[in-house]
Amino acid sequence: MRHFINHTEENYLKAIFSLSQTSNQGVSTNAIAKSLNTKASSVTDMMKKLAEKGLVSYKKYYGVQLTDSGQLIALNTIRKHRLWEVFLVDKLSFNWDEVHDIAEQLEHIQSSELTNRLDIFLGNPKFDPHGDPIPNSHGEIENYHDTLLLSEIETGTFCTLVGVADSSSVFLKHLEKSQLKLGSEIRLINVFEYDRSLSIEVANIQRSISNRVADNLIVKPL
Amino acid sequence: MRHFINHTEENYLKAIFSLSQTSNQGVSTNAIAKSLNTKASSVTDMMKKLAEKGLVSYKKYYGVQLTDSGQLIALNTIRKHRLWEVFLVDKLSFNWDEVHDIAEQLEHIQSSELTNRLDIFLGNPKFDPHGDPIPNSHGEIENYHDTLLLSEIETGTFCTLVGVADSSSVFLKHLEKSQLKLGSEIRLINVFEYDRSLSIEVANIQRSISNRVADNLIVKPL
DNA sequence: TATATTTTTTAGATTAGCCTAAAAATTTAT
DNA sequence: ATAAATTTTTAGGCTAATCTAAAAAATATA
Ligand SMILES: [Mn+2]
Ligand SMILES: [Mn+2]
Ligand SMILES: [Mn+2]
Ligand SMILES: [Mn+2]
Image 1: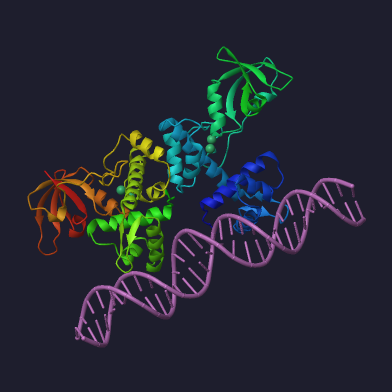
Image 2: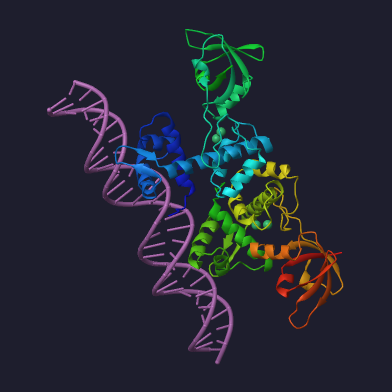
């Protein structure tokens, strides 16, 4: 009963997986459509197809949920995506803001032998260049533990930047201008009441960042 | 006037390029169909499309030829294919008979930045694991020089194995059983008239190979 | 609860790439 | 030079993935 999965289906499964991380309800048709830049009617069609293949459970008008096999494929696609991002940054010297689009293509290459050898070649990395955890070949994924958004921590706290909630190129380039990268140690000095902008200290230099930026920085308190 | 090229088109252009290497006539519809495991009618459709895009010149009933821009795309696809094969063998320790199918997928990844960085990462290799030359980023390709098939050389000659005319897995595995790999030094001892089988010496050991095998070994006389 | 709004599904088209069968053109053989 | 054989093109269909517009269902509002 092994069906073949193509890149379109992989993209849908990946999108459903991401969307189901926040709420544990069924994922809505519109949410999927928005996330994939497509139309609701296209999503409905595809949900029927994926349900047929046993990859999602779909109840008309009430959204979808991944089945176990659907989730395994989603996690495997995410695994490939993140391993390729590590390859691009560590081996080919790409900057962390340049790799996502190329990884979107590479994640659809079908060869588990390739994926597993790539994993070994890269030294079995646990996180990608944006701090996102890399699932293993069984679809097991390390949980972020004790992490918060920078906007959620208390004044005076020291913390380490371990991830970004937005990996758009424009955001990542913006971070670099503020000397922020994964591993940076940050102390929250103050939050201004007026606009909720933050005063922080990084590498002994005091900087100011907007609350919009702080909402996209994942940190671990020390 | 820059059109986008998808993987189907790249495969057609690559096939036309290979087929036009032997004869310098236009490439026939049937030849393309056979090479791509498709039907002549599908090829006709695609030739119209490629002609529309200026990638081939097509005259009804008289086959096609690549235009300069078509040839450039074909060579770039071949470049990507062969660079990825080098990556798989040199970096991920795949055997030379295992890489072709994976490279068939990887060759369609679109990012010239990626291709060029991969090239550098691999040390600007000039040949792939099967001895085939790798075009540079301008579509320039090193010519095989002074090479012959093993079946064409004279008795007594010493030569080096520099390439294979068949890179099927079954043939490559067969070569390994005869201790033959790229760089092997071979002396042709004798050709038997009865079945044109050959007696050769490799690594101080005398072996017998069929003329079918000898027809697929590209050698350079010393 | 009835009505208005929003979301989702259905119906009907479109496009790319493929197919089979039939027609047309070319090439080969007599 | 005709006729036969082969090759190529055309005609008409199919499927996957998409779209727009209309209908149906669910949800929010008064
Ligand atoms: Mn990414
Ligand atoms: Mn990432
Ligand atoms: Mn190959
Ligand atoms: Mn090769």
